[in-house]
Image 1: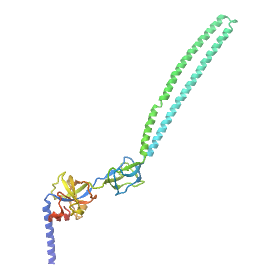
Image 2 (image 1 turned 45 degrees about the vertical axis):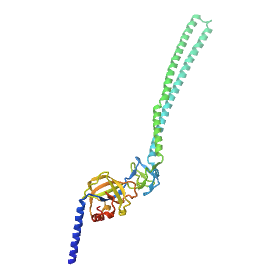
Image 3 (image 1 turned 180 degrees about the vertical axis):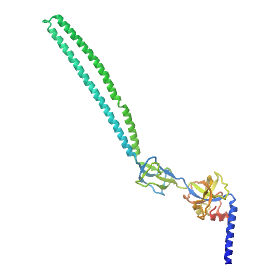
Length: 352
């Protein structure tokens, strides 16, 4: 019983000692902490509904810039094309109808003019025949009477010729007006048809199969819509990220004084290679958060123990690290063998 109490007391004293050491150390400036590698994903979206016709990649596939990823078809183009065709047909029908009406009007005008001219010519011919007969009957009839009758017939013929001339002039003006209307009357409709034809051509171009190509060397991280599926407008179809992680998101414990600066060079090494000083990458501090955040579970030694600190974003050069890999971040390129005992304890607890 007595030995148990002594063991419990020693355990408490050891724990208090560790806490004292941690507290003392945490007053120093940070020179080592943990983080996770990451990269910004690039989503592939379109501003209109699409149909996923073919997929050439799967999640995890590595691609080169320019590689064909998928073929899609706009889902609503056929409906738009049909609507445009309907509008074009309606305008062309109206254009034809207006043209036919004007042509009928012109034909009627020409026919009426011919009839009116024929009537006048017939009257003139009749008066001239009568004048001839009068001359032939001049022997048996008083010359004065025949002369007066022929004079009246000449005046009538002259009046009919004037009427014919005026009628023809009026006809020519009306004919020119209708023909001008016939030639230019369809211009607004023709402009509308040409505008719709342009839209139709654009729609047909969009109706063609669209192809998605990789915009950079990377890896497919997500495919949200499989083959033969429909996606709404502005929906992410898939995501891809660079082949290697470009960033490290590190966390510094809130009790450790943070003396890092933006632009400061810093060293990153994978945690699985912690004792291999050769696999170290030189990074640069991009940002340091000004608010305290909770540590990710993967960076905690004891999952149920809450840890809080400041987030640090670090830019990486080209490397052989994996996305989401745990790494150790140091202000100096030091190997594990040069660490003090306190630092080794903190590393074990994954607070540094």
